[in-house]
Length: 454
Image (tube, one colour):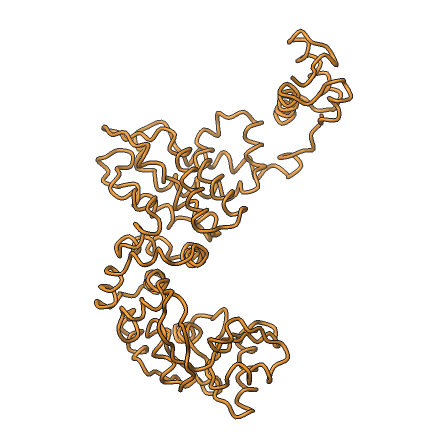
């Protein structure tokens, strides 16, 4: 079934060709079509210059007009339209200082990898391959177009993209291309945090996420981009005799996640980032407070990647609480219900599940079963409605103020204690909640209105 994205791209190509211009599908959409995948978006390459593209379509956005890049919004899904071009030197390791509009054949020579340098005639499906991309696809090889060092020198993000593509497609990196990546790995730190974040998102939500991170480590990219993760390499995890280090455990957890969001994927990658610092050796490794250390490191990583505040707080919360269900069967109901009410509880539970499955060998022969804790918590969670998990508070601050109390340390403590009792089910009405407040005040030798916000 033809997608809306393809139909939009075909409309763009049809109009360009109707006015005498050449128009070809280019890049990833051609690669994915040949792989039998459904491209999420389509790029059109043309000999029409930006001014001519703007004149042909009613809705255009000049996202990089001086580089020959326009976006057409006229047919629903956006279609990126790029003029065939040759690029000058890249002084900033990201954008060319200047471009020259050229032929289709010359255009593909500037692209990153041969599998991304294929062109397709929209009408007939004919493939134009000037760089051996189809043969590389048959051989399952990722190879830079032309001289690898030149391609990576033009845009340093391509170093990371190589790892992502190779992992996603299950391709081997061609020896000269791999050699150039290893040699130039340090240059990846010059790429902006936002661009690294976006590339990591594509990697971490894909089924090949674990292999992608493993490949980053092998190529020397991980130690430059995420030294907190590379530091796990070689640190024993649980019983040293198992022979699995913290990095290998982390990769296993990543692979066990089911359809993770970027936040969950990044949290899984960083959930044990505190272990290298917290590690104490012995027959059974110990990692006291590693989740606290990990939360601090996760915050630093998120700030470096320029994630949104919501993403940062989500990642940090998941890292801090990745073991929160470890003693679910012994928890008070009020504590469990507070966990259930967390905005990202289901992601927290999924991280705990994956971590538990990856850790099962460490608990063989013991009385503790993390999966039993997980199953108990999830059974209870699924049996409760939203109203049962987080009912409206029976007693609020205004009620305490009406009793003559003023905001202060005791004020908040009273509200928390009544809330816990409500979540435990021992206080069921507002009157019972207010009665509890009076009892708590009497225990402190106080009566209504004697506490004055000290």
